[in-house]
Length: 198
Image (tube, rainbow, N blue to C red):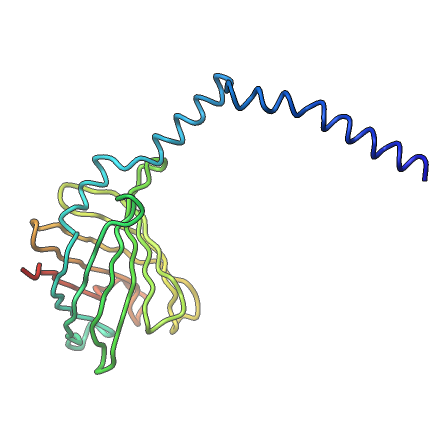
């Protein structure tokens, strides 16, 4: 018991002796800490790459085409998408409402630009799945070119896909998506047109 008590007193003494040093550190950060804080501030500050997404803000009517089989006509549907900046203009959030095969369909997406990786990215959740689609890509001219992964119930696993999202102008965007078809070859699986509601 004496040994344990001695150890406790020693730990308390060491901790107590470090308190003034911790207080001093708060008053004056080392050059390395200042540099680290500057880098963190730069990485967390929205910039010109984020502003490229400004035309996506607002409410849009959406016309969709979806192909399950390239040999058959696409399923066509309509809906609305509303997007707004969140968290101090760091991320763009989309709320989608529409229908699929006569059933109500809702989705939530997030889009943004990572100052660290220098990549645009996105996520997607919807009412017809329990998985999350993710994507990363670059902006080439007026087109965001993404590659990503999504859960495929037919394959029973995550599968890759590619997507081009074109900012036609301030009032119009188009999206095209490709993934593996029934024969395993890449096929266009979806096409969407967004038109601003004025």
